[in-house]
Image (cartoon, rainbow, N blue to C red):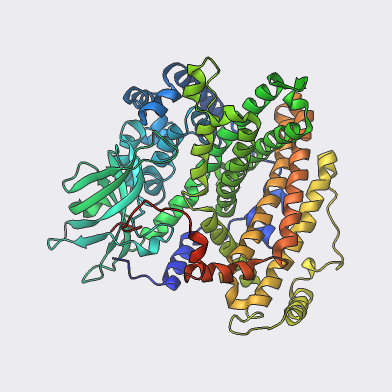
Length: 622
């Protein structure tokens, strides 16, 4: 049963969800408009001494605990995080890293929360999933944003100490489209609460949770505005049952469930915010929580750098270490530079999040998108460097006397990051909508969605007139004086590239708007390329700024930081240039036509010669 919410209503909810941040400055928003406002990220906010002291002390304790008490091979064998490990994390206060101290948590900054996730994720990705699902999207996050003080006083101390939480949003027929939630919350006749009914899928921590947030639709009626709403629910409430613990290709220790809700009573005081605010709560929670994903991806890229370095220096082929061979050396350099670039992006976004005076929705979304994509490329190259030993399990390597380096586990675990908390395709659309909406806000009624401009020439002429009249700062050769950025030394050239490329990206976006008008939203691959260009430009800017920050905070690493930043920026620029070339010269239309013919059964002969033994049955269970 799908929720009766139109696309227009869902979009309005998304706009309402960001309204409170709309007027805050946003580096990403300006970048997509063609404005490199470097002052929004440089100089980076300094880390408060008290926050550093608290964060470093926690990281020290966490590192010791992970080193002494966690065996990643055991998690792989048992497909479960041991109870004593979970108990130890609770004792450390790891469940309350982001919960403010007044509610019993550690009150770590976003910077140190992400560093903790990186440390944990380097041991086993399931640990990162446990803690991030609990804190980034679990009970604490929506309560901190939308909960009443009474709710915060009651529930936050519990989730900060020992109550594992989960976020029950996804359903068998509802993935990245939360407006279609089918779980119902029917008000009781006595007005004291609601009865929940529905089935929730892929709830991380759902198999072991103590308390959850449930998204459900309240029907409209007397005294009820209705709509999708959010509820805090103790998991031991009558009518809650875990039907199945899901198993996956990777994340062997993840506690992920199918949860059934049958006439589950939840009192009125457990409603978070107001009825109908559920989508706003869900979107805000996911926006904030997305910074956890690049932190977990960074764990893998850092570990990949170490593995690649050690293996490529030790392994000898044809008379020299394999790292001396150009083919391997290029991969090692890509891994190291990419890891630096991802760390830079995460550090910049995290400090902005702690500053509280920035709108980081675009930056957080790009961090999730970029981290998962570059992380996958890194682990794929690492697999190639390690060869057969990369494909072999760590357990097998250990059994025959070699160091149990878990490259195949890293690959399996990394793959999910391109899917959950917003797949790459969904992130492209989410960021594109933000970017295009910014252009529409500037353009006003100049480009009418109902009017088709026709051929490319008309679109180009119309767009050119628009630039000249309304956005002269975007037009080439209109008196633009590029910044010198001399304080960045040899990295200044990369910022000058970003400045030029951001204007080109903005012009390209306007051209696409003029060419396709209302149909642009369907050109998802084109929009995806625009977003990827913006992501590369944000990554380049972050790498340069972060290198400068390291020169100030860690002078001994200054020259090395510049070297890594320079290579990363060179590689990112090549990727951005390739994306620009493919924006309007591609095979998208031909590929789309073939895809529709495939769906229509035109090429079933292309499937002959194989057997599908999966049998009959639904691909989406009710």
